Length: 245
Image (tube, rainbow, N blue to C red):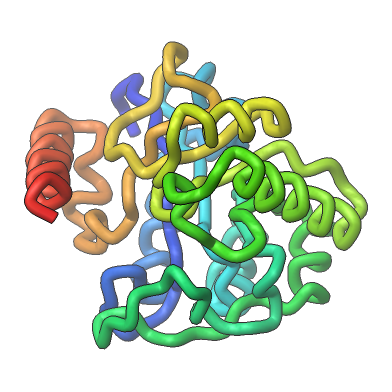
């Protein structure tokens, strides 16, 4: 990307269902190929604020199709990435209690611990996405502390590495939850649709949902003014929907 804007891309499932949480495997491959061909700096989450024009790749929930489809491509290009896993659901499916029953969201397998351990050994950063994927704004501070601390401990025990990154389920948190997260993690990601800068809050980092970039035209336009305008429009519509809801 030719601009000096940096961004964190947020992916969920790499599958061909066309759902609101999905990016098709061939689309993901095209995106990564383009990043490599253009020499775009693809950096760890810890470096993105201080690397102008960089992209950081994040994947929420730890779907098994990350291991099947995304991991080989990332390994091919030597791209770093962060996968936020749900400690209480590895080897299960995305049917946690807070998941609304919706025909537009497919039920999918999550990575087994053996697969999480393998990606960690290969250089992929593994972060926490809580134990049970709750809406954290509805938790007491004590409940939030349990979700955060237990997930961190479980993941560290399984992969044998420190876990210093976190993603808020649904991007949902309160000031009290943020304080809990800040005590344990260096970096945490939300879902605010924006670019990242040196001034971005390290425990409330904005991300750009890859769902909005399924069309390669928009993926390749992020560095251009039309891409900035497109994201601004998406952000407005998302905020409007949230207010109505």
